[in-house]
Figure 1 (tube, rainbow, N blue to C red):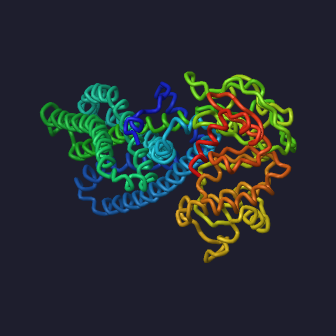
Figure 2: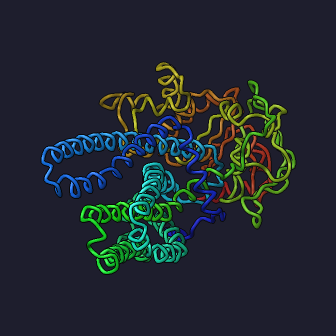
Figure 3: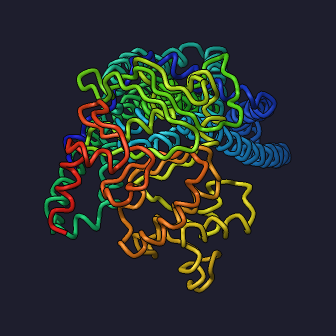
Length: 591
């Protein structure tokens, strides 16, 4: 694995923070009723919180000063009951917001996962799986606090700040101005920090993605790493990425923590200014003890919401890069997609036509160059040639995993671009070199090829590729649970199951891309017996490096440098003594 490839960050479009924030908060619009209830609860709790200092002021300046014991008891009882209501309302608010924010995250994650499944192969070719996982899991999770606090922090804390400031100014404008005199320090400090914080957290997100991608690739390739004794080298690469991740976090958190320091300093200096004015300028005789106590509480009630808002803003700056990365994928358009006026592909016979097709995965390398051919329904075509000649590209274009840059691909006279992708692929059976199996039972893995397949159809498909016998020897037969990627089975057994999964769909066009490359010679004989029956009356494209497996093909296309250089049966091509003859002799000269 290449650590430089892992480090290579995906390019992201530049979008303003305001646009990203507004787009994120639009998800909350589906929960208007919940938000209205939460806001009403919060306004009630704010009112109770503001009343508390006034009750304390009354207790000190009236009931305690005049020794009104009965009045004090009643006031304490009223205050206690009021604060019990406050606690209950706060708990209700927390429950509602937790549920709403988790529902929003669920919606975003479902949208992201659903959209990723529509993206073309180019998207996955250019990104490690670990980086995609980081978007779906880590980046989405980072939005939880932002969504929750956007309602529970912004509204009540803003209302609290305004209400407290008004009450302070009404009660004693000189003390109020002294308390608020340090606001310019806060504003300048936060502006300075904000201009530097967002970019640092964006870098940290990328480093987290790099680390996640490396770990995923490392664990997936652990057998290879251990086979080549590459543990030390891999650990060095991991340590480098870990250092970069830690360094980016420390670089971001240093400026991040300055948020709270600025608020603390402003809070402390404001309190000192208030007490200085009260004691030195106004004097004790001008300010009641209860008023001074209530002002001390009001100062806390003024600056604590500012602390909360600073914390929210801090989270926003910290996690907005996560939202940017999520929306960047949601905004990625699939390169291969249905046009607006596509029709459904009818039941096909299997005629395939390439009309002057040229294709390249990038602008620099031409993979297919003006390729034309016509395949009759039910014909079996073998594709042979050196690695990288364009064999797999041809079958990928038939399945429309990629779109051609020049020319057209037709099936039964229908341009594949003019029919829906789903109706096209549902009539194809594709068996690749990657015999990927999912966690679950053997029956479920075979049924993946046809989701409504009956048990009888599954067993019939397994028998067709000679997988039934080894399945029945397992302890639970078709109900045997497979570990991830079918790790409990041999390579040949996994490939036979993948064959059965393809065959159960009874496709009109069958594509076998190196489908027998991992099966031993004895097993291959069994598979060939099943394949011969399944190929009958079905258009088939077979890619195989073992030339013995394609000797019965109706036609063989010899492909090299993006062109079909030779075409014919095995006997005809051997008689020509061209490229096919050279490949054949090179493979069998030692036999």
